[in-house]
Amino acid sequence: MRTRSIALSSVAAATALLGVAGTAAADSSTPAPSASASAKTRTGDGAQALCKRAPKIDKRLHRALHRLQGKAGVRGSVARLEKRAEKAKAAGHTEIATFLNHKLAHRKSLIPTLQQRQKDLAKVATWCRSHQNTTSS
Image (cartoon, rainbow, N blue to C red; front, side, top):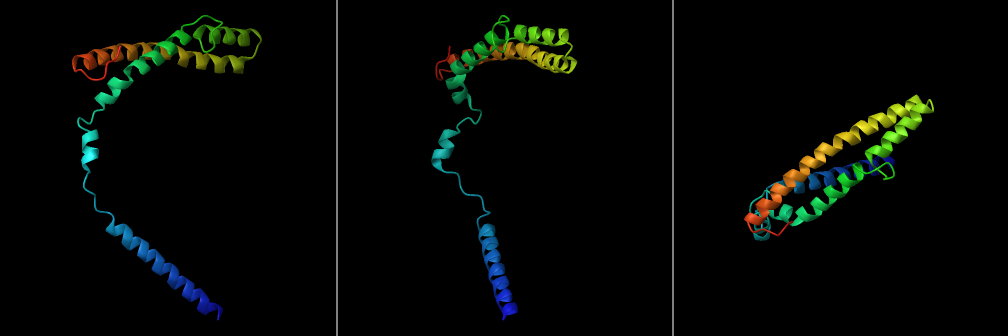
């Protein structure tokens, strides 16, 4: 009796599995793109969306650079992290000082990257204005 119920449940599981596999094989054909999807991706490069987001991106870059280049009292600034690393080294906490110095090197490397992004974004904003997309300043 027990082997019979095991055999029946195995057959039921195999049937269910084959039924799902057959459905998956039938659905593997690529559907035709809808008209609304093609209207959304006219150029495909995201220019319109980038032109729309450019002012917000510029503000975010400006805030990040202002914070990184701030004085020692500004949280997240390079100067504050330098001060912390110096204090750790003076206290003899070499592992902490090493960690903070590596973090400091990374934070310093962010400044030229963000400055370059600001320059690139200014060129994008100019392009957006010339192509009369969403205004960006």
